[in-house]
Image (tube, rainbow, N blue to C red):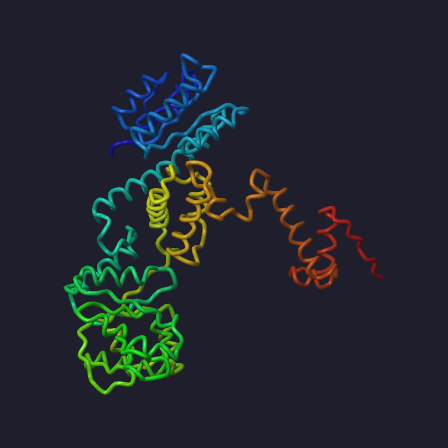
Length: 456
């Protein structure tokens, strides 16, 4: 198996030799001592990762040559990961390099184990980006209604969509909010024989119950106060196409009865009307509610459930699609940066870690919205955790030793508990799940001025 190619750019032969021999067992290592040689090797070998010392001849004391090399390499291959190697007192140059598109930076003297960790992460991110590019070409940006992902969980959804699209049976799509249920419904429509017909969507939970029946089935003139004209409903508007009933679990009892009749007979009557209207429309439905519980509670008709759920597609939550999260984030970044005409070329390493560790309770919709906001708020060419509003609550402890971080966290928790309990030590100890003497000991240890009560 071919090794991954890595380029070391440094005019100090001692440093480049040490780095090469430290990495040569794992990578196919190339070395360059100046910008022209680095660019020649870069264009010929296309290394995935580059370590770049900014101080290159003929101006080894400056950073101009290094920044020119960075810009030229990224212009040639924007997916290459460049790691800036910089002196301890030159952090501003390293940060300028990150703003210019570098992946990360490392201070001299280079610690080999630290460098290897950064390289492995860079390779992981690069692989995801290249998979995303490949997937975009394969899908042509259109297949599966714009859905993206390579994880086994989403591939199973693709397979189900492909199978059910050409059939004309109703499909029930279940999943948490934000998992892409409407995208799946649109994909079924676009891959079906009804793709030239309309795709009509209605959110059953967003329309007041008094208006929902009229919205679905339409009404005749004079059917109720305010019905000044005859109006077609959503079902009738889907003639020859697909009707998508989102949040079907919120549908009240009376419309459930009429919907069941339509599914059985393909006929409807407008509110206030007596004429039966034949409608040829395929019904797709979606819900984020627990249908089994709704059936037990009598909130949803069992016969309607079996009519709608001829085929059930379960949309996986984003937290179960771990390999898709960064791929989706980069797709959204590319989309919204292009729309906003912003020159943003990726996520900072800290942002990548924040994305990978966030629980994503809002699923794909939350991810899309956070990236969209980040594109608007970003100041540099890399998205940061702050741009995504994913700054870790533990970030204040980074850089501390474990003992100091633990003490600071304990102190903060005790201070907050004391404030909530208005200084009452007994209630504070109870809230923290410790005894009052233990709380005294902790406060003494943390220098919080507790005076232990003397008990006889």
